[in-house]
Image (cartoon, rainbow, N blue to C red; front, side, top):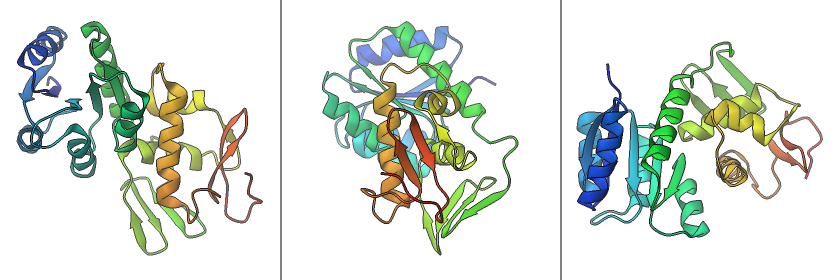
Length: 235
């Protein structure tokens, strides 16, 4: 069965270009021209991946992305006409998996779509234990659920994958390159930023004090360390 891509952009010419490239690559394509329509189409069509423009009428790309991450969890590639780091960072912070700045090469977009779909198929851990506990933090790999004490923590699929990889390598330094390979599954041009932003989002959700993390700490010049709560924390 062909995988389905939802393209959301209010520029008809842009949708036509993306549609042509994706259909030529073997994908089914559905589209929407504003934020509210994008959510309706996503609920009806259940796409495997979304290509989402940032600047949309009725409901902007940021809000659409946040809602889609909660409801669906499919990979989201955000498009922006602004070559501004702030826009890219905000897009990643609300849950986008990747971004492209217009104008971009349709061939590059297709390559990134393929990479994200390939990674999405490999997302479920094959040899992970059913559940792991670290003090108040519990991670259920089968249900992809995280609890901090009695409270369930809502993570995006990418945040869960990062936590999963780190926790299964507890007390070992995990490099950014390893996270990229295991979680994103391809060479991402802005690798430091996307990893850093995802780690920051994860800390905001699972740490009591994100500025002084108890679980996910940074090892300067090396990567990240997931610590059991009885270990001595690092800054």
